[in-house]
Length: 331
Image 1 (tube, rainbow, N blue to C red):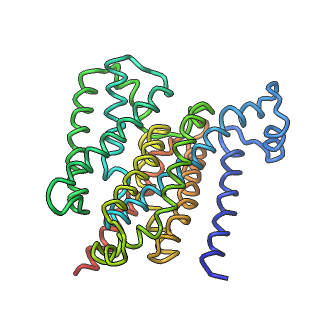
Image 2: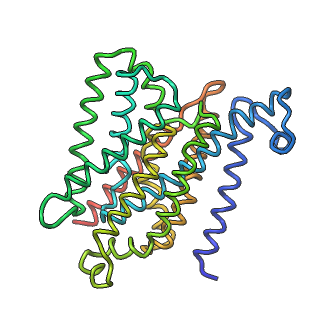
């Protein structure tokens, strides 16, 4: 049996273990037997049942879907742009989502998280399309360098506008900061149901791009020599990233470093073949995100540290180490 198949099976068991920890651990620990009873014979009069069904089950399902989405989005972007430092923010996804949420709060007084989902998704999609359109100007089309530069420029512009609005609108800041921190807590099953179709479509599309990303990651000329339509392939990769990262950001806010870290972890296990990197990233993403969420619940009881903060604390040292390793490799 291929070693990678065995490792993939091990990750499935690891994910199941993390899912159980997410349901049982927190400020109010719940025995595993009580979790099973809550899932199979829910009684609204039992507090532990309410904790599981109304609070922990939605955040666990979101962690599962969002983690898989961010892991796959990062892998797709790194393959399509041939940029090992790429993550969903490279296409302006976080900035576009934040910009539209701020506009919704400021102009229309929206305060419901369910409204933020559609605003953030629309902003992420339009910002990404804008980045791709800007990068496509010129004869060579949307090259990896032009995509990165266009993404950085549009991100900087949108972030500046968001900062200006927040500095002059204290009420908007109060509403926006709860979404901006990036959290699985406070979301209910309505949020899960709204984003689930987008996440499922994005996951299927991303997993179908394995052979395309293998060609794009090697070289443009090699991909064309293999008969691939590189423009179409990169457009499909961009669409997958928009759907995955846009839906994930809309549901839980911008969560940093998962999309950057997970593809590198997957590549260190599988090697450079994207037909293996993608399924590994799909499993490693939720394992990392849910583990970070559980850690955030336990470090400061009875309160908790939001998962976006925990992933940033984990990802920042990884990012620095990655840059140092690349610089040493270029010497």
